[in-house]
Length: 255
Image (tube, rainbow, N blue to C red):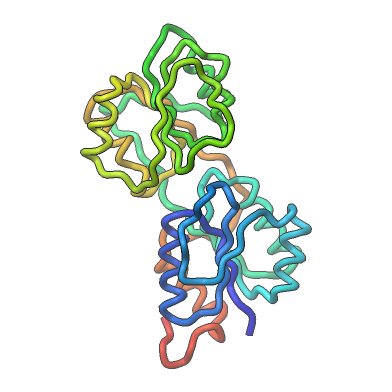
């Protein structure tokens, strides 16, 4: 009968996993291992990489994966590229859950940049209070701009030294609410936010708070990905899975 492999770590992946578990669909939830304490799921878990395209292809064949749901973060581009290639090589149906990107409105003060290097270059100039809302993996891009006072918010305590002479660190796990992020930006007198255009609702409150306070935002646009079938939410993904692998669903439950 096989099972479905969920590449997760996002709100959409968590919701899809809950739907699959409610319907007794055999599935495996995979975390990349970017956080030390991943959210528990109602499905069997695996944590860590696959070893590139070949490793993922071998895993799909060995575990008899009948469909793959790519619900990774919009900036997990290499994993998504590997998934496309591995599914092509193994002949496995692939669907992505792609949350819509955030849209700029006329009153926003966004500076669009292509990647993290451009985001760092956009911070050249006089000292500012910067909310570096990009997680912990890529903060080294900003070490050449030590004049700023940085606010960092991580899911876990960092295991290595923070490379900035002037910073504040908050360890907390979202989602966050608007009032809390308004209070945060005002308490630390933030001038600029640096953010990836992650889309969705879970991380949007900092963008909404910056909008209400009239703050500048350096917005890192999403990386380009190869063509693939995609839906915007977990409900449509479940319908796709039911039509693609109906044998996974108990007959008395369906979608």
